[in-house]
Image (cartoon, rainbow, N blue to C red; front, side, top):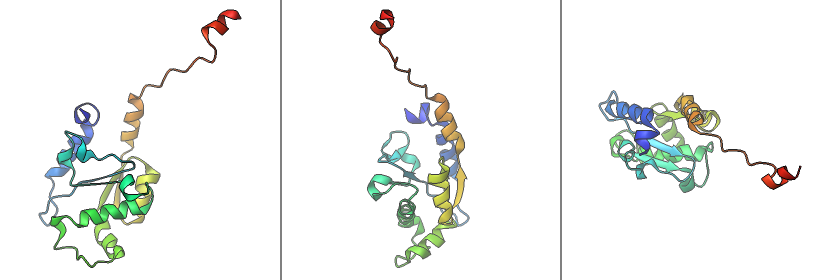
Amino acid sequence: TIPEYFATAVVKTIEEIRTIQSVSGRPVLVGAITDGNSNPRDVPGLSSFFDFCVNAEEVGVSKPNSLVYTTAIKRAASHPFLNDLLRPDMSEDALQDTMGTWWVHIGDDFMKDIVPSKALGMRTIWARQLVADQKATVKPEPKKPSRSVEEFVKD
């Protein structure tokens, strides 16, 4: 499964995050913002780690468009743990200002994750090792010969 073979460090980190409580005693919300149509809540072994997911397909734009991030803020803001902190009539700017200071966005792409979330006032963690580890495990596809065996033998 994905948690056992591909994302062991990620799962371990999320498990630790799940044990953290905010200063107010509320649990920490964990969400996923994906740049396609994937949803980790649909993956066996990962679903219990996420409170919400926003993906680019449902929003209609991909990262780094700020709409992806503001949609995630709205999704998190609708969570019952935050009902007493956020008013339903808050403007989008007020919601961003309020959530941004409490939000930590972890991403592996500097331009698509870190820059746009910083622009919304979020704290960020650039997880470069996610990309480095993935590249190290991907084997390059064999190159297709430029000539066939028949052509080579003719020469």
